[in-house]
Amino acid sequence: MSRRGETLARTCLLVQRDFYPQLPAADIEEALTGTRVRLTAHEGELTTRTGQTALVATFVWVAQLGCEIFLHCPRTSLAGDQPPLVGRELRAGLLALSRELATPAQADDGRHVETAIALGASRARGTADTEWRLSGDSFSTLLSTEKCQAPRWTGTEPFGALLGGIAAAAEVFRAVLRRLGEARGLDAPAEWLAAGEDRCRQRGSHHEQCSVQSAPPERRGCRYPGG
Image 1 (cartoon, rainbow, N blue to C red):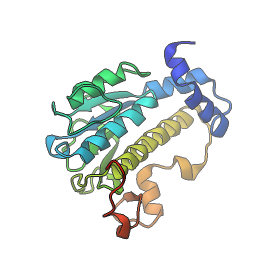
Image 2 (spheres, one colour; image 1 turned 90 degrees about the vertical axis):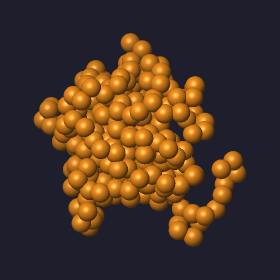
Image 3 (cartoon, helix red, strand yellow; image 1 turned 30 degrees about the horizontal axis):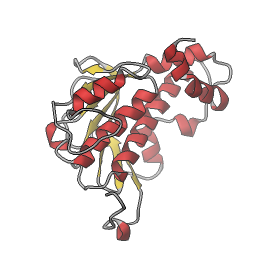
């Protein structure tokens, strides 16, 4: 088994166990590594530690899926520690980290991608099958369709940004499974694999947005040890 295959073995097993038991791991691995994802974050989103955490978290979770990431962000100094990055420069740290993962990332060249994720008010570039916008604050995150307006990242605590990275990567994974099933003529749970914007409408949102909170409003002013 290749190093990439070893890295993605558990993900492939999850897909076989819960969604497509008839598919060989090689087909699942090909679908994951053949998915292109553009991450866009402009300078205004990266002036805060929270915005940088959102980019790092999204990058790491998507990279762990084996997808090919095209990174569109400026050279920016780190606003504090951002594990697992090393060094003091954000973009260089992300690209260096990806070389240790299943599929190395690269600087964006504007090509068409399957999924595009833009942070806050960042202006997206190129075209994509599915486009998302990710914003939030210390304790919450908002994942919305690209055509929706989204505020810039604010706050000082990392919890909302970490949730945002997980939510964005989940949509990437969902889109991979949906395309894989359609290509092979296989059925999977319709609600789970529905396009994200369709699920938002099903839940009653008129703005095609989904939000997650890690703490109720009355707790958002609390400081945590090490915060």
